[in-house]
Length: 160
Image 1 (cartoon, rainbow, N blue to C red):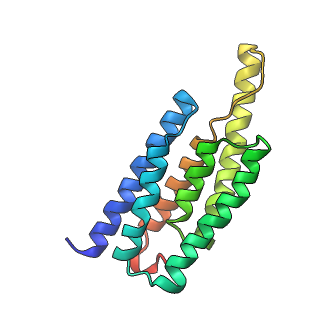
Image 2 (image 1 turned 60 degrees about the vertical axis):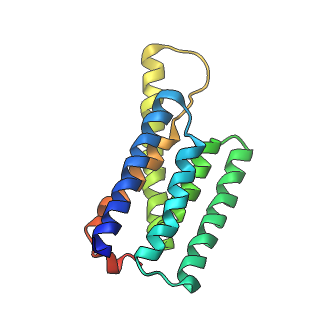
């Protein structure tokens, strides 16, 4: 199997993992640690197969993930985001160039806002009490799938 085919298989595996994350967050309001860990541990395989250099590319991916974790752990600390969401975003940051990941964050914010709006409407229709618990993993997964779709249309040589 050539490296480009293997890269597409890795992207496919990431897509499947994101779908699982979205479904479990939607049904259980929980994203498993093992799923986030699997996404994170598959990233170095992707790095090696895609020919990334240790410096600056691999170190850059680790730095991006550390920055994302720090920012979103702060969001978790103030109750604005769940822990599984933080870990999922951190794991995804290992897979994408920082500019691509910035696009992911914009799409995630729009999708999350729409999801929140739909949940608010649903709450009004059903006349339920209590706060809305938004399964933000759905928005994260959607944005990740959106970016994978865009990346898959490119040659593997232009990803980084």
